[in-house]
Length: 168
Length: 236
Image 1 (cartoon, rainbow over the protein chains, first blue to last red):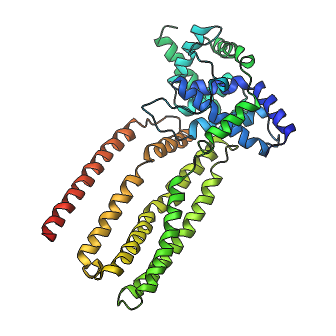
Image 2 (cartoon, rainbow over the protein chains, first blue to last red):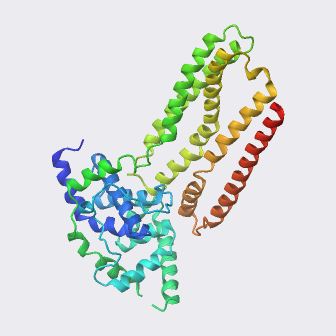
């Protein structure tokens, strides 16, 4: 059972980092249902794990760890039919449109390029785009900072080739 | 697109989302109610089901042991079966306990993937091997109770008896064994990819998996049909 003070602190922190969960759900979810599903999975795992968060690392690092672990290791059976949960529209937190606000077209192209990467590369790319240090990425993913550097260089090369092929 | 541009586009893209729909306590409470057990590794219904089967098997086998104390084979076989069920029950409890540990998400991706792969490739695979034995013991004991009323039991015809048991084992084990293989291959790939630079696609694994499933389904259908034909000629 989480105390009231902790609940408020949790909500404050999660709402501060709300966009991170949206971004990760968007990168790993193929459809709007998938994204909603992932968003809920991540939120629930964060909620369940919060009592054991001791603040030894930054909240954002902890959140990335939980969110990426949820997306990468979650066992999902591909369903032919869209899933329906009893959560009402009032509580849905993913925007109902697939459109991306602001600089829509460029961001859509970026997401399309990221979508070509495998799930591990996606995780590293998200962290890189969030301007995390190599040490922090290494800690979240579980590889050495040197290996992180090598992987980032290769991923950037892949993206560059993709943009070249697409004439972007 | 330049490197700096990419980061700028990424950062700008979702600035608005931070202020859109805030997450409230109501949202979380609704989530907890509607999705309890759906996340964090999911509830392993199969493990709870096997646990119930073992307990029931233990109860019925003990009862059968009391009834068949004068039977020349069964008075020796039934205590052995009780021992096996006790061991299976202990293994089941350990497995459930270890599965609970998999629900930790606050670890590095490598540790998380390693823990899942180790669990499902190790102790869970062993459980898949022995679980049908527990079910067979349960079915065996149930039929013994029925037979106690009716008279002669099929155990007195060893060929038929062993064939039925082997068939039951095959039918139960193989479909169960391959239900998670693609998911595990994917995770193993991810683990390999953490150390190596080239990602191995799971497309080949998926294709192999589909072919294997096809062969298993055909094999099982033939097995069932063959058994029916044999049974028809044997009994007729």
